[in-house]
Length: 175
Image (cartoon, rainbow, N blue to C red):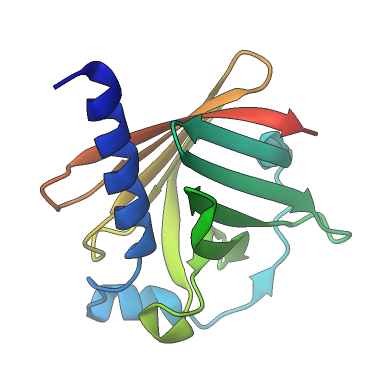
């Protein structure tokens, strides 16, 4: 199999995995994260400002984009879109939340997971490396953003499915 075909298969598989991103794997621990009580405060961390802007990954006929905006209260929110052969495979809303002094990366895909948010606890925040985990979820369980150069990032998804690890190389296309 050629390298191009292997890469296309990886992209298709990643799109399929992302489209089922939050369908399964919700057990009690994750439900606890989803129903966290406590004061929710805007996230004001300047370290997270690196996410702002529009990001894009293109591979063959697949395009994945993320757009992050800084809100007036200092928090960040965004949206992700996966497109294959000019067809939208899925859309998601993204945000960071600070709940009881813990930062969460929050994803919502409206037609999945009963429309509920899935929360990933920030476990690492070092310079240009951000790691978010929800071990109760089947896939992904770990989402890693590694920013490098001026406008590049590698997004890695890891979990318990056969496809243990997927990566996207993202380029910032707009600040």
